[in-house]
Image (tube, rainbow, N blue to C red; front, side, top):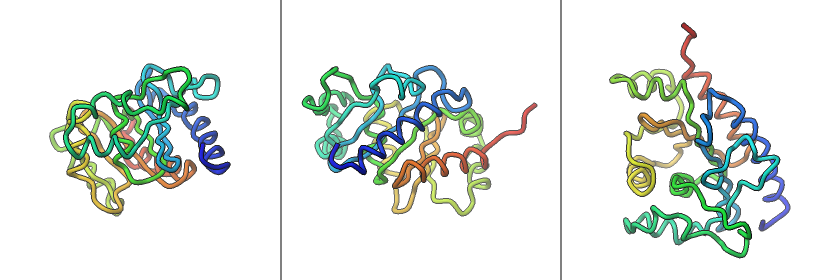
Length: 202
């Protein structure tokens, strides 16, 4: 890690990741991922690991952001293989980053949480889902991204929708992304959005 502050934030992210991973309303099995930007390095949950194990296992893998973002911009298929952008010297276990690494790299905020939130997905799959989300998230800077295959197609879809200030993404038939400058800020935003999108129990 670049600084002590980065190390503290990564520790906080691990704790939050474990908490998110224990909630079936936010995470199913090994789905979902979290990340932290430290300088030019993106630390993201490794593919095949579980968020709930973040405090007992090494689940974070370092990725070089600049070349990955360049690949997305150039529509280079290499962006579909984020393991090609890992920083080997900081990855002794050879962990592979999630195929959704590009989602995290594209968001300018330092901390990004991507969850498969049941309440969000249940709205996003409906024909009028975007309109309903717009009603519930009035006053919040958010963007709706229709379904794309994870990897480069999803990254390009997000790039086309991003605008300054957006810190919430609703991914059609997929999930929820929230981003903030701190882990604490991201956690608060996640709680707020989940509360606004909550469906009454039947």
